[in-house]
Image (tube, rainbow, N blue to C red; front, side, top):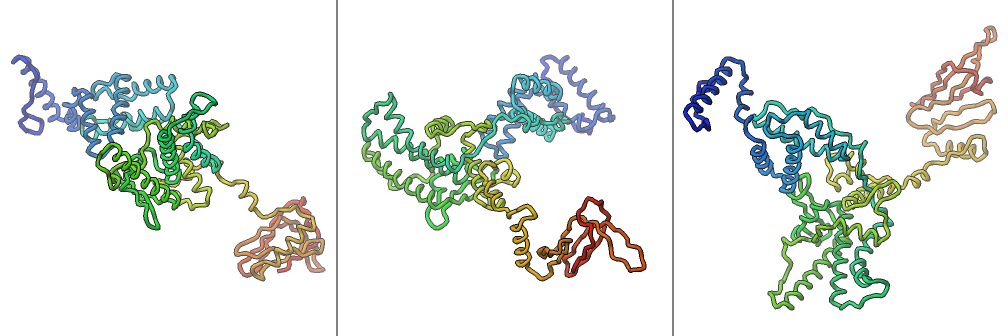
Length: 484
């Protein structure tokens, strides 16, 4: 009987009666300790799982992830990560999941040159699995929950950069021309004579590739997201063309409607028309049924598996450096960085840029995906007001002009010792004037009293002057008058 009085039937796994009795006696002793309070109920619930190998429990964990809607690719990657950790740390049973051996394993990987970001991925994988074991009452504690992660900012291995406004047209042109050009000049400077059908095929490849780059640069779609866009999800007619990204295909699992620029929508529509004509011509040549329309479930743009290598070749053909002088590189995901950076450089409101990037945190949009080299910082400085040094006639003329253009008649006049009036423009608030030191007028029968001052001019409908001590270094030492 169990500690709560229930009658429980268990398989002892013994081949002899003596072995079965031994297992039964051990189990009765355990239940008696639970009944007397020497072992907690939580500890008792995990007992049967302590001898179950982790390999079988990992399968249960992946079944749980599939039920949650996690993508097969993520599950495949997570399985590789856990297998690598278990084999390296010697984890076989749930009781083996300890923090110290895992930390030693991470330190060994760090010595071998593994990046902080990669080590954090393994940390997240084992911590998530251990947390699932706790929630399923298979272990008592998650020993990896409070373990600090590595500092990724101090160990960045790859820093992406955005393509500049001058580089984008070069890349699109290179993507269009490279397939044909490299085939024609494949054997040196002497061009090859290619059949017209082969030329058209190579031009079609270049057109598809350039359109793929332009779509990613104009929408910020991730690589796997653009793979999921089908022809039926492209709404190119009407005044507001857009692409529909389903929730199951988006990284955040929210789904989105991505607006398209008018020129890109027209180019995509023209591409689909030519694609249908091409499919019809091929069907006629092979005497197959001629399609009257494209399959709505077919991909809008077919993305090659080796797109990263293709992009590198296109960058080289366009003479665009893969890495700049700061060792920032261009890869496929840099197209998304370019989209965000040029949105901000074009003056788009940060909240709008966040919505187009489909980020939940605006800091990710403005910090991680913002390339400062695309911003017109020099132009921003040129828009600052002129700041001439004092004492010149030009400065006095500008100051007088500023007083004439003041929005109200509440501009105070300060009369310095040179007898000239300087007008300060009025505004709703307070103006703090430079620290001054001056004598205060007294009656004839009283001794003059020296007072050092700060002058604060309040603009809330009246003028108020307050004085506070200051040293003699200030040039305002003669008898002055403040006119309100």
